[in-house]
Image 1: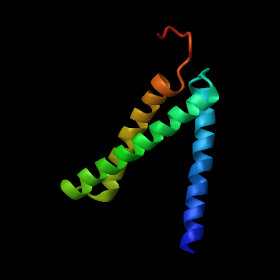
Image 2: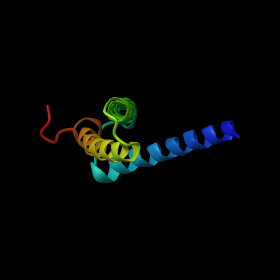
Image 3: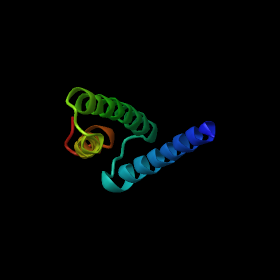
Length: 100
């Protein structure tokens, strides 16, 4: 049961990341970098966001004693805006749009 649950969670995350990356690249940011370059940047950003998420959750809940639901809401909202900004500036930027 645990194996099928793990597979389901991983599969859902991969599908979600694929859809999110595609929609953000084509619709939200209208990036024109090469697909594989954008995918690698997106994956690197996702790994960084995950690491920051874990660190902040640890800090807020274990070190500062915040309730988990409150910490989760604060962290997710903050990281949503950070992630969105980073995707627009570094992951899906448009070549030739006034950038060096």
